[in-house]
Image (tube, rainbow, N blue to C red; front, side, top):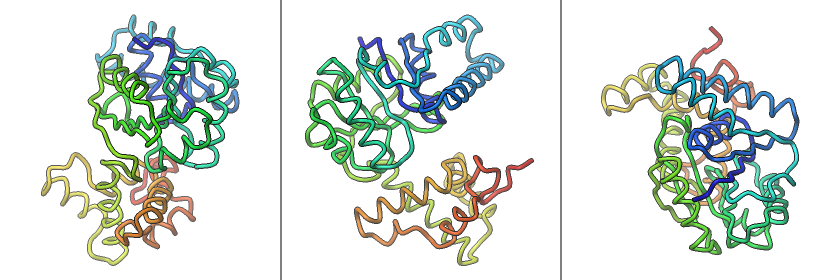
Length: 285
């Protein structure tokens, strides 16, 4: 069983992945570009673990044990001994390719899985930046990672079957996730369906069909969804929604994936959803 895990990025997704790996007892090394980002990631992780303790979902002993499994670094060279590395940084193709190019040279185990948590970018494009594309695949977790049980496993055309199995086995047996397999197509399974749904809700607001509140209430009470599409878009981040829409529209050319002008304007205005305090709803209070 995999024991030495690396996580690239300590933002919302990276911290969540590091948390579930640490709670599973893995030796988790987390990378951030700057020490201040690493410190913020550790604080985010500690807050999440403390919340789990306060809600009775985690004992204080298990929280302390999880924290003891975590180490933070700003040096990618520290990942040399990792058995699986999961990248969860900004959705930027060139930045991701550069990180994987470096990891490919640094991580010594030829069967170590180098995984991207990308929600939209083609895995093959990322793998093409490496000399050993066989160990690159997609491992897409969902926010919040400690709560949602799903992970999408996305092999590229060049992914080695043994490496894919190693990553999937770790996600299911160690982290307790339910894995589904998807082909390497933008959006994979969930976002292929979810993104046009959220964009349609934005267009309804744009066209004055209904208010955000009524759209969300309609889908919660009429379709039994736990939250409406606009609340979900605010949680994902409107900038992220716009970026994913652009990537998927470029891939498929389907107008249902085109970013609505309203969404583009909101991003330009800095109204990004929960993380900025304002999106389709006001979170400043």
